[in-house]
Length: 164
Image (cartoon, rainbow, N blue to C red):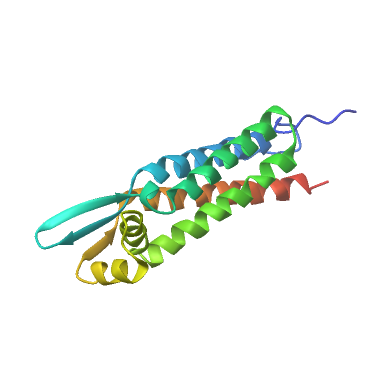
């Protein structure tokens, strides 16, 4: 008797969260990471002015790369029918999650990075953000949700690949 390929539903009750579905969910999580990397991560207000700071003004390049790699690994897992490739998609998902949590915990991070890119020293950037009211924006939350989905899908794909 032959066993069905990766992601193929069988009579053993693999269910709706089969291997390919997990890979598609992981790829969707990677896509959310990718999109979130370009969106607004922080909104700074001060002296009657406000400015939005996108992910690409800070750590967005790292999360963008992580999102692309996650999408590639999850889709490669489907097309090559290798669950371990999909499981490996958890790693870039986790990397994006770490960057997302760092930026939520320190919402001044992206603003300081932008100021340093504009020529301010680290100490000048820190002094400049002290008088600002900075709030976390939706792009960062979208990124964290996508990173959680990608990480969870990769871990679940690994767990399913280890079943007899």
